Amino acid sequence: MQHQSSPKLQVSGLQAYYLTERGSLKAVDGINFEIQQGQSLGVVGESACGKSTLGAALMRSLQYPGKIVGGNVVLTGIQLTKLADSRFNSEVRWKKIAMVFQGAMNALDPVFTVESQLREILKQHGYQGDIRSKIAESLKAVGLDESVSKRYPHELSGGMKQRVVIAMALLMEPQVLIADEPTTALDVLVQSQIIALLKKLQIEKGISVILITHDLALVAQVAEVISIMYAGQLVEIGSAKEIYKNPKHPYTQALIAAVPKLRSEDKKINFIPGAPPSLIDPKEGCRFYPRCPHAMESCRKDPPEFKTETGYVRCWLYQESQT
Image (cartoon, rainbow, N blue to C red):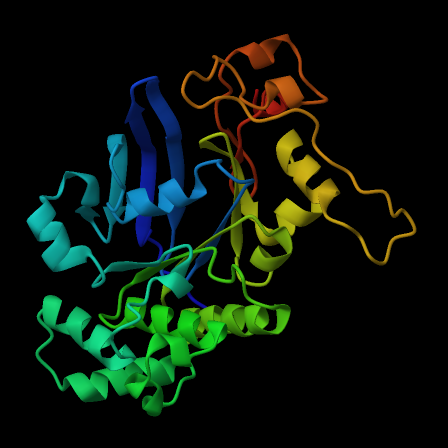
């Protein structure tokens, strides 16, 4: 697929904090990345690293006491973080950028039919065309028959509910789709169907997809570019091939090593010792420092982003290669 030379979505220095009585919890702290039209980006990391907060920040859907406190998000030339709420809601939300939220199977209202819920979204966003045809078209795009629109959520399987929620996100034909753990609680077969659907939408409609997940095996099936998130920061970005074949950051290396290898004679399961740091008061320096097998004195200072062939890595180990 040919991608445009200018980024469809560009994120620089994004900071999203939860302002609590104990202090500011720095869930997203200085995130930088860009994504081209029709490109897929995977955001991978362990639980509570800030992945879902990143997605919500891009959508400006952070729940109180969450707040974007710094950085820029630019979508097709529009500075999203400085846009008035009214303009963001009328011009950007669902029309240019949409999101499939985590736990999407519970997002459908049990007392309304699928058609009623899809129709409400179209009305809220001022759709002027044939609503019934639009609903049928959106359901068809995710592999569902038009008859599904007459059903209630409890009449649908888990996979069908997930497809309906994706159809909702696609109703206004956004340019960027954020999918936060879209296969949670689904069996392996349905997971593969949802992933195949996301790939199909990316190819056929030219949608830029951001897949948020903790599953390294899953993201490999979708993402061309993978970003590794740890303690509120992206520690490495690279092509999918580069991340899997030649991971650079010690955290990325540890994640890859922790994936069970069914065809290997070595059946030992690796794990990362220690625990992530508190995001309320993270100490200066590399946040992986206390758990890193390569830790050295320079790691006590915040590492800059060192360029790689396909992205960057935040690690002092690569200082010499940049000089």
